[in-house]
Length: 419
Ligand code: FES
Ligand code: FE
Image (cartoon, rainbow, N blue to C red):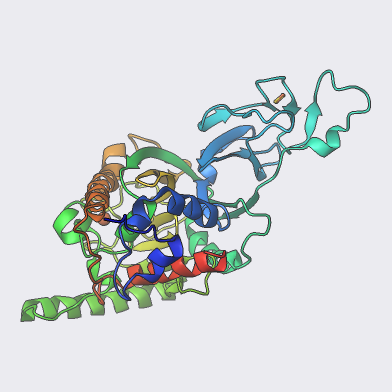
């Protein structure tokens, strides 16, 4: 009996039936994972942090992206700069560990080459008079700050269409003054599944009703497609009520200058994949909490209204919900074919006081529970896709169109890079 011939990554992609998911090997093979890291986490813009990670000059947030490590730094002039975490001498890591630190200068632990926060090499002992320190600045990383979101691109020539993301999000974030926020809480979880399954899971709410009792208090699955076939009259009436409420909220928000319009760049032509829209929230329309009321009575920016719904934003490695009182920003970093780090940050007004304006439990309980539930779904699905019996089934044309789009976008990006 001969062994099954090994399909290339391209052959695996081409074997996908339109409207169905990828074969299991796309989620588990090391060579596919390496291609994914190279294209989706090195050549495209990814979310790598928020401005509140580094509130003061000298703050450094070190983030690992595949084999690469980057240092996101706030310099003495309050500029946010990003460098490769590689010493220009013999390559040592400058920051030894991922996470946050506060420094005066960036000092390599090996031979103490010392870099200014602007990246220039200020001190290198025993290198002689003819040594030209100017050529040995830290290697900069392309960085784009949009609201509180710090996007980076490790490529030499980053995709230019990040300007569309900037144009869409800058005015949407503006009333919430995202840079005047602080991190009230953050959590990291390693999900036992491929990063694409994490993103697929995030792009549908088909699973919400059965899995997310906490989130379902505030989140309306109708926002992402709905099929009334086979449902009774009551469901039809509910859907009509949802539509009417949605229209009324949108009119109301637009009149007050809060942009609601859907913008998406998710098709094959988009390098920078994103979707944004101001969504209604069930109940009070205020916040993604159990009660649907604000978790922080000190609203973001100078906002006066609590019922501003949810400015949601997807990227190909992130999701964000911005409400009147707080924001939830999450991003993912793959660490193995079957392991993905998910970092979630809860942002509140920089002057909000814990125990006075908000309490952490009310603020975090919905998305902490939801993230744990999603981690289970992803691990369970990853495992199932590796079973010899797995055959990719059809996506719902109503509730999972974004997943088929994601597959086509994923395929197109790989094709563009010769895969
Ligand atoms: Fe950094 Fe030598 S490797 S100072
Ligand atoms: Fe979910």
